[in-house]
Length: 160
Image (cartoon, rainbow, N blue to C red):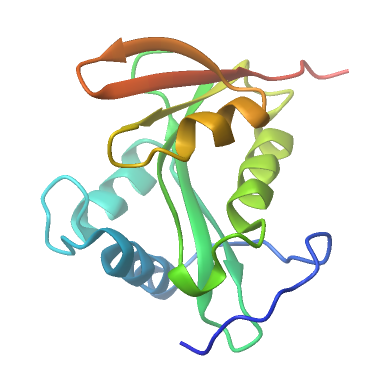
């Protein structure tokens, strides 16, 4: 992937993975960032399952050359009604510190607001120390800690 040029935050296009080919393209970024492309918990088969069974939606920011700069995979929360959960998200290393993840999270907020009451996300601050302040800046509040996993929620605006 070529070095991404700094693109205008407002002009950043967000697409949704609609086909198996789209899902595989976005998944390749996840595997490159996190490793474990055959990991049972985060492998391609699990992506497909969550997309189908849990009404998953994958939003991503494409670069000018069609490569994926960042993505967020959101699905229905397993135990809370009217809640969507950010299951996994990443930014390609060449696109970090350009607002890609912020734009994706804001897209989720506007996409699911009205029909859902909240968005949740879990993170592991020991591994991803930038996530708690990032989430706080977007309005997410801590709702619990389960071992090393910290849970956050964002209350969404009701439909007007």
